Length: 110
Length: 142
Image (tube, rainbow over all chains, first blue to last red; front, side):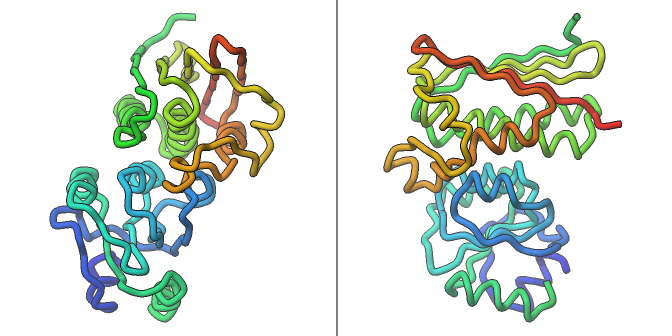
């Protein structure tokens, strides 16, 4: 499934404006400890987190995640969204707790 | 052995906003000279963790990247202190001395050095009060 399709099927909002939505989503990873995510995440996964600071964008870019899904209404600052667009990492806001967010992805077959 | 490509980067202590910038540039630089995605992914993990360590634990420092004649990629992370008091503990998964501020940002899982060691082909760390030097080597796997 592509990021675009994930957004359409869930109705979640995409915070980034320019980041490409044609990346493939192949699995997902839930985590907020950055070294844990860095050490255990895999390319093409959607990363579900409640962390909303600048380093999240760096981790997602280096780990080659397909997108970041911000859970639990964590609030994204504009400079973070701008950096995500710069690094071409789509950032999606689910508005749901981490568990419910992951459950929705499972329902979609991710 | 001669270096075919050499780059140096400065890392600033406590500057979380720039964390990962050097690692991103290293990845881009090596991708441009044809290093395989599999090796790039290992390098990205190791360089990011090491760069973060320089920001949150050390007083900044200098990162040097070299691609050697035989294709080996060497990255050296050199900081001016304060040094790692107990290297053995620092290499133990789950052990961390990260500050409250760093932990609030999701750092301090105690997985930094263990992650770096796991993904590197060569790993050497020397530390004293005068600073820490971490030397990493990577090769394409046969």
